[in-house]
Length: 89
Image (cartoon, rainbow, N blue to C red):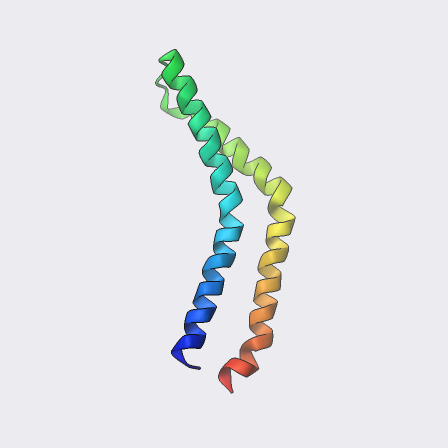
């Protein structure tokens, strides 16, 4: 196993992690932005007001995209397991 192989595996792992986290984080960011604009417009400065909508968005996002995300993670893990003989030898 050479440094190029390790670098490639690390890069693929980062891309899979970004694909898994990206949609959930972006939706949470969008909801946070909308709630912040609402707070600024109404002068309501309640800290817990942003928490519940973000949490609900994350839960709904995981319910919708969760099975696909799990399948992507399983596929990546299986690919890594299949490549072990080639990586070692």
